[in-house]
Length: 487
Ligand SMILES: NC(=O)C1=CN([C@@H]2O[C@H](COP(=O)(O)OP(=O)(O)OC[C@H]3O[C@@H](n4cnc5c(N)ncnc54)[C@H](OP(=O)(O)O)[C@@H]3O)[C@@H](O)[C@H]2O)C=CC1
Ligand SMILES: O=C(O)CCCC(=O)O
Image 1 (cartoon, helix red, strand yellow):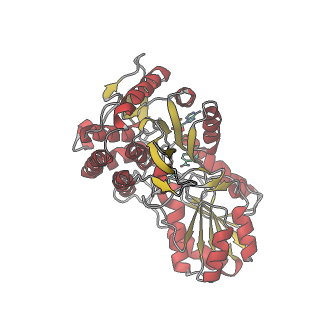
Image 2: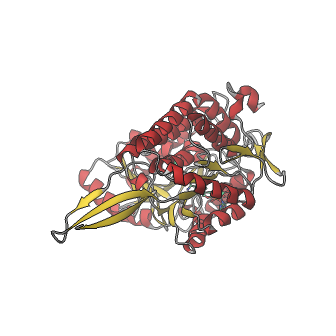
Image 3: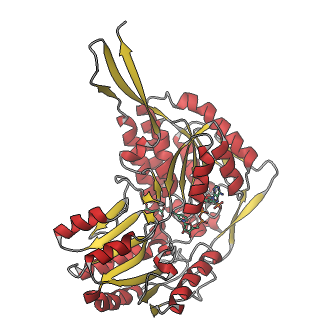
């Protein structure tokens, strides 16, 4: 069924990709991949485990010796070719994504372009890995710095952005001269495998980019983190798993980059352009059915404009059309799993049991097992779980504040620190609040903050390291100092 929807059915791969070869599990095991909108099985994928992970790590180690000395310009050309192929196959890749992840097709097309932009960006940055000549402490010596790839990288990625979370790790790694073993989420392996196929077609050498697909994430993760060959772990996903991977990586003192959970506040002050704030909050909350780590988790609105905001925002939320993402009339798709629907339901029920009121939505939808209605809740307080926990679903809790200090205190009252947003026309406030917010990214009168050119990442328990931009390459490079004496 999925195969018939593709212009190039050979993009639908169901085996792992190791050392340039498509490989099945040694024990022949496979796992099913489901379309969350309709619950149908769309593929049976090889269920690889520790043995195949080790095989991939060893292939990456062998490939590293050659890849690290490929001239930057040549690495750049290969990445550029990969970028072009991804865009050439944008529609097929988008269809694969909507089938396995559920997001509406327009969002999938957008993610393919967004994912490709990381490959293009790092193809360009590959040519700009500069060293330094430093001032010297004495006349008979010179001090230099060169940058070198960190080595073999282990990457683990989530299901919510099955393409872009991969390209923004793999592209900088390859640009830097590293080789990589990727374990994508078991819910969305097909997007990862299609990317690997296009990388192969682009001419990326065998062993440079390997994909281990499988359901035993714990075992694959343990193999990657315990290996002395793997020099860096890069992860996007839940804070709990990120902490575990950091602990496991400590034994071999690996570099780590962690892009973990968020609890993004949107602060809307009484001097804001309310039309802009409503639209901004809408985008920030409901993108990918609320399953984005920088999705607005708490909307904080000043008391004098609270009623007006609620009424305008609820009216806009009522316009969403839930449905299968492949239908052009759907504007919001399903959640990834029944478990996700249950999790969102329990957060809403907790708030309602403590006095929150439902403006719209409030429960699972009858569109299918994986759907939750776009929801707006009002009269929230900070003892509700919704104030502390990442919702990862289409639920907008609207809190009220009365002063700027209260808003900043509420915004910072979380262990997370990924993205925050504010709407105000007051320039002094922009600086005051912007500097006080304990977040890695702050959107000011704007919530569409992501691009390949910006440093994406968080502080506190939202992680460490940055992805995208010139900073995103540094995480894959080691600094080496040369002290040159007289001969
Ligand atoms: N920062 C972000 O972008 C994301 C945040 N989240 C948050 O996490 C919550 C749970 O989502 P979930 O999908 O379970 O996120 P996880 O953190 O469990 O999954 C993310 C990735 O980590 C893998 N993984 C899971 N357990 C381990 C382990 N012990 N060792 C190594 N790898 C592991 C998963 O593999 P597998 O799929 O095979 O289990 C997947 O590839 C969400 O509701 C959301 O709050 C989730 C996804 C992305
Ligand atoms: O949820 C995530 O981790 C991906 C964020 C998407 C983006 O880059 O905006």
